[in-house]
Image (cartoon, rainbow, N blue to C red):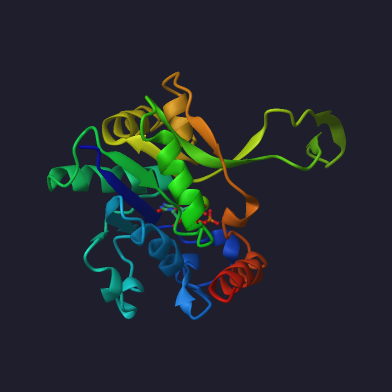
Length: 234
Ligand code: CTP
Ligand code: MG
């Protein structure tokens, strides 16, 4: 039987957010940002466990009450120096504890994408369940793209045809994802799909929308709050 697990890398420091508190703990609509990411994943019936990968020295997680998710939540304090390391460490520990099999689907979702919707998640899973490789949520690029030199002078306009912005969740089977991330250790990858691509495979892009953006800079917080507020107060 196909099983679905999610892994949330949440061991980053949020340097671009310019806040002492790691961004996944900043409050959005009265809850830490990561609460919203967990909440959407938790309510999907196919997903049986949610692994949350924290930094080994995380002292913020225990300040909050996670009991409403306790039947699915497994917290691992094994974050690494990069996102890819955090994901790989989490996968390794889950396997050591016999919680995952090679064929299980793993949905890796950033703690910093709190606006993921139930509809996007359902679509990702239903479109990829029978896929050989797996894939990710993504949106086609809409702006005109300029390539600059180091002085910010436009060198040329890049065609945006067939260009997409990668989001999460990114969904791959355990064995393939682990192999890909191990193989990509020396590459500077910022998502899981890049590791799969480095094996010569072609992850499938599942059309999402810009609401599922990654909260990165201080200005992003207000937008995320607005999106979540509107969703909770239709
Ligand atoms: N992440 C992680 N381990 C790391 C770095 C990042 O688990 N060593 C996680 C973050 O917590 C986040 C996700 O990966 O949920 C996406 O990373 P990003 O948005 O880049 O977050 P940060 O690395 O924390 O932010 P920044 O790059 O601005 O420092
Ligand atoms: Mg980062």
